[in-house]
Amino acid sequence: MRHSAVVIGGASGIGLAVAERLIADGWPVAVIDPDGGALQAAEDQIDNDEVVFIEADPTDEDDVADAFDQVVDRLGLIGGLVAMTGFGRSSSVEDTSAETLREALDLNLVAPFIAAKAALERMGASLSIVSIGSLAGLRANHGQLAVAASEAGLKLMSQALALECAGRGVRVNAIAAGPSGEDAYAPGNGRIESRHVPQGRFAEPDEIAAAAAFLLSPEASYINGHTLAVDGGLLAAGLSIDRP
Image (cartoon, rainbow, N blue to C red; front, top):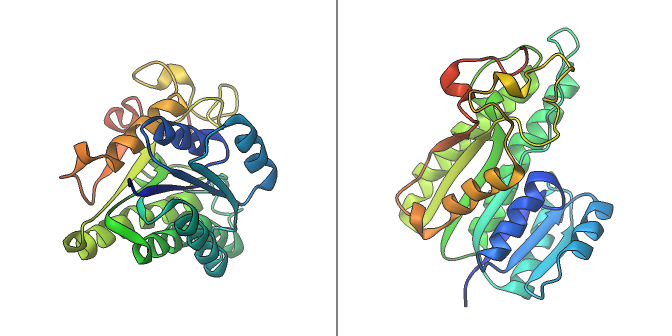
């Protein structure tokens, strides 16, 4: 039996696109999300006996452990984990409080760490972990101190996990996603517009999901400790993602 895949933050947006792509690829999938309403909507949208929906706080170790135990009981041992970061608010240095920074670290760094440890403790013969953040973790930008600090930590944590766990049949990678869909990068809000992306448009959630599905797959079996920018060329262009 194929091992299961867990998607943290999989009830909406890119996370839901990831869950749907993994289902299409044949994975038994567990969608874990703190938003009960979004989970119910996702469950109504997805009709599949090999998909489970679990409400849990990704920053709470006990909550996550209980959720992962439910996954193993219902779908079997875990072979894939995709964790979405959950903090993306912008504010100037002056408006960024220590509390804001702690919240960003908790959602964007601590939560993926908790999920990774839970998956490692319940893995099958092999395990592939993918954390999805943004370009803020690779390039400094105005108004992004909390996001940048937390997601840069996510990048290095992924490398550290990859280094330490490679001998156990574990691969750990990350995705730095560029602007996608109808997110905060829409025109007119003082941040980058689609015309500034070298490809001339924002990403579709399905395109980010495809990258995550590839990194989980056997086709990526020799990719480990890497952060893949899925950004339409923004990083190569050297453009700030917060200003036109």
